[in-house]
Image (cartoon, rainbow, N blue to C red; front, side, top):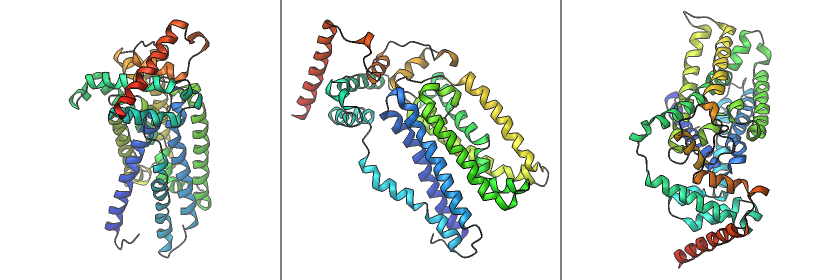
Length: 372
């Protein structure tokens, strides 16, 4: 806002977008770590709803100052970026720390307290949170015993997941979203809607917001494949070992794809050699068709799976369409069972109820000894 030259302003924008990149990477991973598998789609996908709300907000402010020739015409739209930054600083201290992150740093008692804050009171009272912590801790120990290096990131199972995540974010940008965000008003003008360009931009963004809300409300019922929500898929497909790194690959691809669309569109739409004009939309339609087949043929269905279970599924080297009905037997399956609760057919008998009580007693005893 204090910049006097376009160079300084561009540097400021670069720093602002650096912060956006960090948030896009961390927030879905954080939400995926906190939410049980059966409702993870709602929480991990909610960031896309807020992205659309931000788009509507930005379009409305830009529309209000579109004809302003004084400095306030760019100062106010720029200054509005301070509002979400201020809200982050204000509200982050009230967020619960990720129990999985705490366990990775050997803070089991803190992890249990954090999990107790975000699980139903009944689960806390009957000891399910203790068993969940034990199961996640066991998975972390197994992961540390088979700790992967950056070199092992090149293993086929991780490359496959990174490619799927990258393509999800790629199609998120090349199916028309980034085009509308960057050149929506120009496109509407080219098809004769000069007087209503910003209004149509807001309406299109509102339609996207409505679709996003419907998607996150149905994501855990319909599954990942039909909806192809990139942030949900990216946040969980990495499992426990490479989740953050694979999510970083996805968000990097998102930024790169958005840049390519923004950079090349003017040369395609109204360039010196190619002048597609409104027919540019056919490019996004073609990409949407490819994205449709990609979603149903290459994206694995991870609905309801625990993060610890994902690694076991990929180690089985399954085709994407086999994930839905695949079975697991490791600690990841145990985490999923605990997250979903004990059903009528899973209620403990007298014998395994004693094992259940012993596990709770043993874990509490270990926590107490660490505090002492």
